[in-house]
Amino acid sequence: MDRLIALLSAQPAEILLALLSQPLFSLAVAALVAIVWRLASRRSAAGGSDLPTTALDETVRARYRPEMIAVRVGAIAVVVSLVLENLTATLTPPDSDAVSWWRYATPLLAGAVSLLALVCLVALRGSSAPRRPVPLAGRRTWATFGTRADLTGAGLAALALTLTAIAAGLASSPDPRGRYVWLEVPIQNASVDPLRPWFFGWAYGVPVLISLAALLVVGVATLHCSAARPFIAPETLRVERNQRSTVASGILRIATGATMLSLAAAWRFIAESGTTTALSIEGDGTYEVAWRYAEFATAAGWGAPAIEVCAFLLLFFATGIRTTRRRSAPLAQQDAEDPLLSLTESER
Image 1 (cartoon, rainbow, N blue to C red):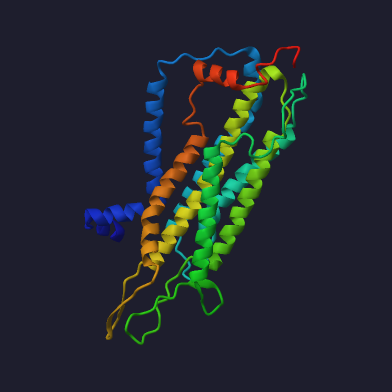
Image 2: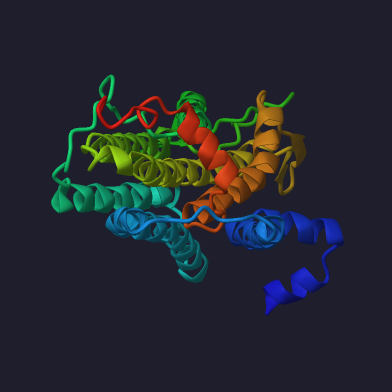
């Protein structure tokens, strides 16, 4: 009741700041954007003509359908894990002395478990015995079917989280128990002990980096396991490539979305600790507080909601909300550019 009264009496700017500090608000914004995007995609695709499919194409798609479902379930699992963690943290009285690193590693661990289930599915289902050999130049690796944009996005997200954890760890200080969970902020022009707010130090960063490493290892293994399987026949090559590209895109978006959610949580934590500007001591007045990287902490606080919205959108896209049927013109162009599909039957 007190929170409700305080919210009703707050200024619009204060209400907006309070909403931006909640990951669930970012989730609501992303859901609204995804719905609008989907409606716009349907309208733009209404006038197109679908490429007719054969019974063989449908058979190939049916074979990959369990993997598509696993990708969608994995993306949803990452979102649900973050929602449950936030609701639990809100409803459960916090332990002021606990290093709750799992709050920042939950999306990463959920993504790793989801992709681990997918790679087990791919491995247990095995590979279809090729009806006829498909001559392909080179060896297919984990990067074969991922688009450049998805691969770059995953790499940048992992790099940003790694640099954030390292930089925050180097800026942190140990508490009396030796845990790097403090940020020492000096008091300007006063002989007062530094201010020591709770901070995203090594005690948080190391478990997050370990979780990130686990996610990357499982993600690469899943991509490689999916790409290394033989194709069924030359005539199924195009459909199989499309299906594997879709699976690879979903894998990379799950990994990127989970990493960005952890990055946003870390940035929000850093902003809460590093933007304090004053310290009031009863009977002694108010002292100015200045951390030399306060500008970066402020920028991180504003960037966290934007990163969260983008992360949720990636996870929504991984569930297929952005999927549109391929049109005949682009597909015909793809066939024309594929040297294998242009071979004659005798050349095959």
